[in-house]
Structure formats: structure tokens, C-alpha cells
Image (cartoon, rainbow, N blue to C red):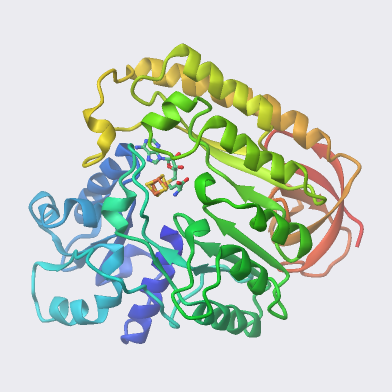
Amino acid sequence: MNAHDSEKVVGTLLSEGYSQVPTPEEAELVFYNTCSIRDKAEQKVFHRLDQFKKTHGNGKKFAVLGCVAQQEGEKIFDKAPHVSMVCGSASYNQLPRMLVQLEAGNRRVTGLSLDTDATFDTPLTRRDHPHRAYITIIEGCDKSCAYCVVPFTRGPERSRTSASVIAEARQLAAMGYTEIQLLGQNVNSYRDPSSAGWDFAKLLDEVGRVPGIRRVRFTTSHPRDFVKSIVDAIDANPALCNHVHLPVQSGSTRILDAMQRLYTREEYLQRIAWMKAATRPIAVTSDIIVGFPGESEADFEATLDLLDAVGYDALFSFKYSRRPNTAALALADQIPEEEKTRRLAIVQERQRSIQIARNAAYVGSVEECMVEGFNKATGQWMGRTSQHKTLNFLYAGAADLNGQYVHVRVTRSGPNSLAGECIQ
Ligand code: SAM
Ligand code: SF4
């Protein structure tokens, strides 16, 4: 999502007459987009800002964008006095006005209001990937997970109209993009604000019907709002990739309740059962937080047991990180750092064995891949399956396969990828 925000900001700057340079050294104006989801990401921002200044700070103007800008606000001007602009993601549509102030020599330009029902639609987006394009369908988040800063940094939920999403998908297809990824903190709570009144499953299906679009992905899904009609749409429409990222966070209902996730372990497993019952094999991936305050050994065991029960295709796992403004800050029984580290290592080891076993089951099968690049060092092309697996393969021909869809026979597997030979 941050990468796509940067694409939109670059597009806005280009339309205002700026031009992009390859490195910060060559820039007169440096924009730094930031993440504050965990403490480490945030610390990195101030370290990098310091480095920018030391190595190539002279005479340049600096702007900080994104969640750290929103969270720290004007304090950034005190912590990093070479910064002249801070702007959160809910204010990116104000950038043209803010740039005028910046160019006029204003040293403290801000865009920090979250009081908006506007979305940042911009037809000017400068796209970094030649074949896959992102479309934001919903911004902000109305949930209040006890550990999470997003509602404080990205503001309330705002959905785009279905007509503007479909128009953007058609425009992308006309430009030659074949894969679209729909984005939102919680895409499942998408509600078309126009009279058409589409829900997420309808929008997903219709994007998959845009001529020229061969693959549609989406992220992120919140289990509470993940309804069976989404699985039915995937099952019925082959343009919708058979991969769902459904973050669970914990396998213990007690911890899910403390996290204010609004579902139980059983309700989560019900959603998994819908996917396992589909006729297409749907890959499922997830996010886990270990060491949330009060997580006992039994709660942690319940998470490990859930990993086995679901059999995830991939997992992003994190140590709980205390974030400003969040409800979990006030919870007693914080878990010591070493214990979080221990639990994280156990989760990652368990997941590694699950992935080794799941990927091994693909050996001998033929998968359709969208080709994303060539690795000179290994002499292999890199493709991505509909299930979002990386498939490295050999190809004897001389054609440039980038952006092509090819069939590959899987001959080997590892924990994080598959390998094979192109057969078509
Ligand atoms: N909206 C998505 C959802 O509800 O699943 C997730 C958004 S968040 C950007 C991505 C992931 O970061 C979360 O799923 C969670 O696992 C992790 N995360 C968020 N806050 C965290 C925190 N305070 N400490 C550790 N991990 C965190
Ligand atoms: Fe954060 Fe929860 Fe919203 Fe996801 S649903 S962005 S974890 S508050």
C-alpha cells in the first residue's frame, strides 16, 4: 500500500511539472514515505533522515510522508529541522497546494488532517511495475485492533465508487497491464458509496471481467468481514487468483478477544473451511503476532496448533510492538523481549516445515506463471503462479518472456519457492 501511495505521489509531482531523478543525491526535493506499523520501522525513519542530511543534505528540501508523518506531526520539525514538510496519507490530495507553499520558502508545511471523507483518486499515478498495477479501493480503517496504529494514521474508512474503480481497471487494461491488485486495509468492508451499492465480492468479480485483465489479486482481508460470497466469486471466475491473505494474528480466542479482533478461532476456521471446500485450490497466507500482552504458553501453543490445522502457504510473523495511542499500551503483563524472540523463532521454524511439505506437493504439476524477470546469476526466469508462489524456471528459447504467461512443469521445491522447466 505504501509503495502504491508513493506511485500516486510521484504521479502528482510529475503533473505539477517536477521530474524524477534516479537517486536522492541528484534531487533538489526529497520525499521520504514512511511506515510506523512497528517501532523498528519508525526508528529507521529518523536514522535515515539524519543520514540523508549528513550525506547529501546541502541546499535540498525534505518532506516526510506517510504514517510517521501523521503520527509525529509537527514534532518532526523539531527532531529533524532540515524537514520542511510533513504530510499524512489522508492529505495527499492536498499536495499541489502544499508544494506551492514549500516552493515559496515556507519551512513548516503540514497536511495532517484526518477529518476527510475524500479518497486519493489520481489518474496521474506513475506505475513502477510494467505488468501488475495496484488500485486502491478503500482507504483508512474503522476497526480498532488493540495493537494497531493504522486507524490513527490513515483515518476512517472511505470507499471509492465502483464506477471509478472499474474505469481505472479498464484504463489499465488499455495500457497493457494484465494483472491488477486491489488494495485496502480491509478490502472486505468495501461498500460502494454510489447508488450501484456493490459489495466487495461483486466488485472483485467485475474487475475480473474487464477485458484484457487476466489476474486479479486483493489484500488485505479481515476475517470478520470475509464472507462466503468472496470464495464463491473466486471459485467461479478464473481471472480471480486463487490466493487469499487472511491475517489471523493469534490461534487463541482469549488473545483474539484481547486484541479486539472481533472473531473467535472457530469463526476463523469456518472461513478456512469455505476455502478448502472450493473446487479451485485456494492458497491461504496469514499474519501472526507473537507475545501480545498476556499471551500464555497455552495461548502460544494454540497459535502453533492453528498453523498445523490451516497449513498456510506463507506467513508473515511479528513480535508484538508497543505503539502510541493504542489500547494495548495500557495492558498489564507485557511479555519480555527474549520470550517474544523465542516464540517468533518457534513459529517461523514450524511454518518452514509446513511450507516444505506444501510446496513438495506441487512437484510434477504444471502451473501457469506470469513472468516477472530473469536472474542472470542462476540463468533462470522468475514467475509467479496464481497462488502467488514464486516459480523459478529454465527456458531454452530466446524470446523475452517478461510479462508473458507461460506453463511450467514443477520439478523441485523448497520452503519458499518452486523450480521447474518451461513447457510452453
Ligand atoms: N489490515 C490488516 C489486517 O487487519 O489484517 C493488517 C494491516 S497491518 C499493516 C499488517 C500486519 O502488521 C498486521 O496483520 C499485524 O500482523 C502486524 N502488526 C500490526 N500492528 C502491529 C504491532 N503493534 N506489533 C506487531 N505487529 C503488528
Ligand atoms: Fe490495523 Fe486491525 Fe485495521 Fe488491520 S483491521 S489496519 S490490524 S486496526
